[in-house]
Length: 281
Image (cartoon, rainbow, N blue to C red; front, side, top):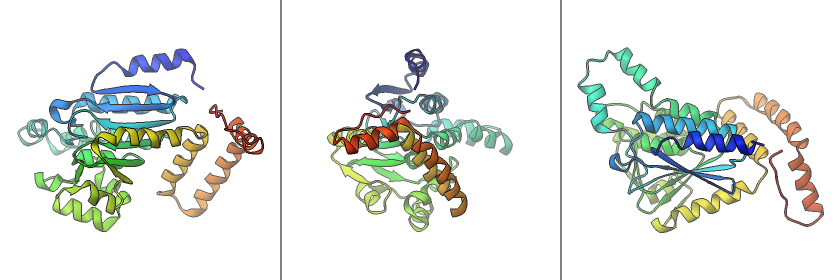
């Protein structure tokens, strides 16, 4: 487990910016996007750097068992900052190579960082999730929406495409046909429509969103963190590997699981008819 000094160091480093406000309690880390003036646009470099930093820190800190990602203000995320996109892309003299580099060194770092993160992430979608904001929800493992939330894969409305990985992420969340409808029309869908197509697992009243997200997070955090992290690894790798390779990975991870103290604690608790106390080791 991470030492107290290491944890304090991570927290101090992570709180160097208010682009995303981080809270930690009882194994649950909450990330609140905090660029209210841009409706939490994530093309801002400070926002990108902070989300990537927090993901890297959480991966190294075994005290973090689950993460909730949400937005301050009335929006989850408006996606791209239109003013910045216009200045950087439309009105600049950047070459196609320079523009591609802008994406690779900018917003595309977020899905890559989230892909490497073994800690489960819950998106608590508190309002509109538009464009890259919609894709950001798909980078998370679980999604709960407030009644006021809406989702739009709206890039075509700007004459562009999902440059942040959305064409890879969205079909895996809702299926190819629904993803195509959202991407080709750019039209928004309501929280209830998102529930019907599987983009979110639950829709709740706006004032109940964080309570529901925390309740789900607690259901995850109570379990052995090593097992949870490895289960996430297997699920992610299962999207890219064949069954035979996947089974080989599962066999190795299961062997490791059987030799953890948490596995012994789980078995002892069952036979002793008590609640287990998992330490992450």
